[in-house]
Length: 180
Image 1 (cartoon, helix red, strand yellow):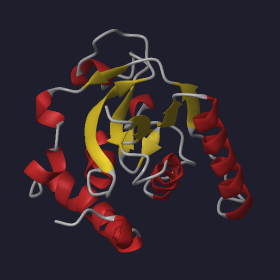
Image 2: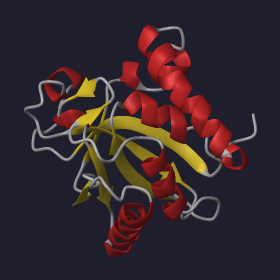
Image 3: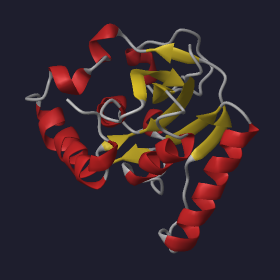
Image 4: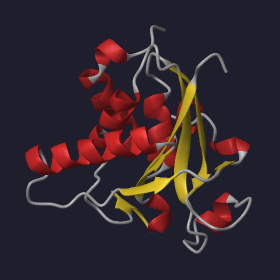
């Protein structure tokens, strides 16, 4: 893949995280799916029961010459609440947990150092509950989940939950956005 890399994050609803990372310069592709559980080839319906151990996740294909893993991690922590266990807003359950699935020891160390920095500077009174787990496998979500926000902007969840999150992200990271 020409030196491209992959990162695997779970930060609540994968429609939200996909919508954010797709806008970043250096990100080639974002795929929603499931990671962190034991059930092979899970479906959305199965993951939503909370019994598979999987989290709604995204796979980010990126060019490390254009965007660093460190910046991907920074954006991850700035676009969801890493102090709420198994919850992001009204989305509740272990499948909405905060998690980073690292590929190697370097990525693990970057994540741990960033969490330590956040706990020292930003979240002094709350503990970050983001799961840090070695990447094992990623299962792609069903096709109707792919590019969900872009294809369903008028859907109430997209309009009420995702749009404000994306707009806030675009203001903070405007210099990092893809040129349309």
